[in-house]
Length: 167
Image (cartoon, rainbow, N blue to C red; front, side):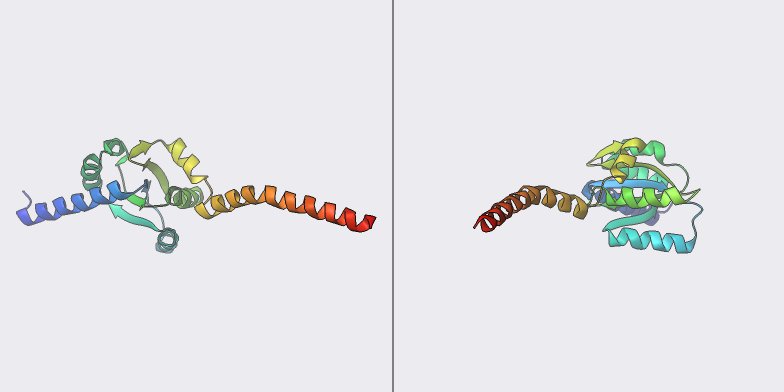
């Protein structure tokens, strides 16, 4: 039987992990076995740069935390070695980075994930990974707004050019 001190530590760890799950807009579970230290270091750097928290977690603790955070559906994916990546603001960053890494690795696999408090399938996770970054989306929207203005400016310039040629 574990000591009272160890049980308290585990309860604290579950509570902290549940809070991480509740505060995240998206999360991705991966099986991280078979990667080198250099690959892991690069992956963690890429995730940190994108504002994604990444940690290896014990399946039993994560299962309890997921149930506490109303994400009980994640329990079926908690087998083998598990790491959790969560983001508080960017919906696609974790999925994009981890899916890209998994495509180059034979043993590193994406298990499942959640989006806004709902467990999502691997297909939805792959679709999320294919979304462009927030900056690219904002640039696309700006270009869409700018296109009519640029067309109008070209039309005005063409009229001005025609009038100067006629004069």
